[in-house]
Image (cartoon, rainbow, N blue to C red; front, top):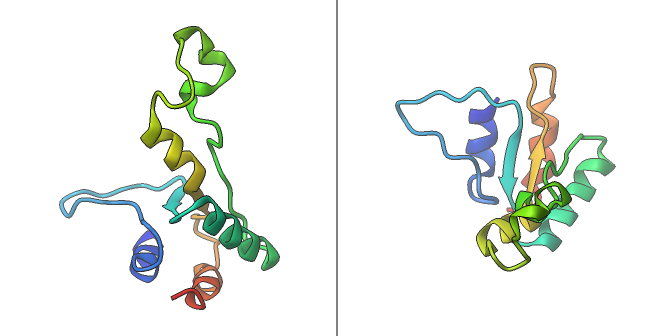
Length: 109
């Protein structure tokens, strides 16, 4: 299913990179939208079609309360912070109707 997702979504979003000589067992399928607004729009469309999607780490780890003792502040890890604003995950398990999921994206090209 990840191959189908990658093939269909590679021109729309940043998809996971899997090296040629490697295999990946996805427990979540994370995508990177171009902006926080685009992510919100996509997730709203998915939810409207009753397709589960989620954001696993909306707050970067270095800014979470449990790591406050490390002394990091906003702006210390700008790449991480930027990714956290744009990343989200699609469902990826055997029973997922991935064709239904992909149909939602086809209108975006």
